[in-house]
Length: 102
Ligand SMILES: [Ca+2]
Image (cartoon, rainbow, N blue to C red; front, side, top):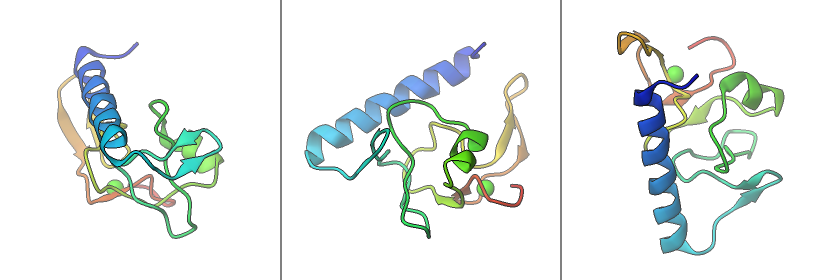
């Protein structure tokens, strides 16, 4: 079950993403839809789909990892936060879903 904090951040991210799409009009796409503008293209030329909130295991299964965070990390791909306390267990470093740990 999503926490209120996560739900709010997800909503903010979606709003941000949609605003970006509306401005740019033409965005790169993936099989899953458009690329989330908050995340950069990986070294393998892939991007994070922006159609929903993805988790790192899912993205890794799609061959997507070491993702540059260039906007708001609403999918929480970088760093690891304890949602019950809000404490960062592993601080964000600008790269999400590293292939080898955070
Ligand atoms: Ca990271």
